[in-house]
Image 1: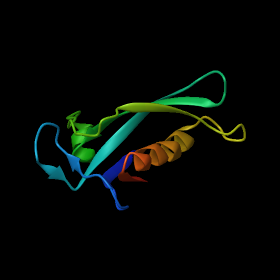
Image 2: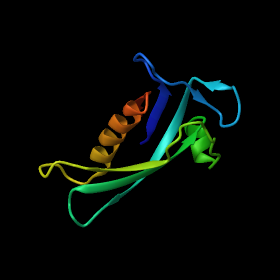
Image 3: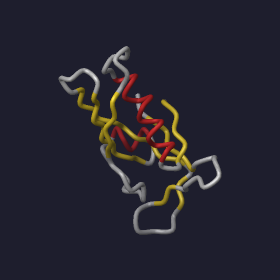
Length: 104
């Protein structure tokens, strides 16, 4: 399970480029790693991007101009620190950066 990131659809949405080039990518596949802290409400997330799922399987990262590789957030006390919650909050953070994201 991962995230499909693409150009933001809202006004001011950002395109994704291969780092250091003008090559615009339609989308990239992202895999997250997360740490659920002992406080029960904080999650740290880092992620890598790949051209697609096949490139993820081969371990072939693509470096993009997405200028963040991780973030942290506090979840509600009624939520569990889980992969599903980490993915949902990751989508919100990625959308705040100007990109679109869906779980795939």
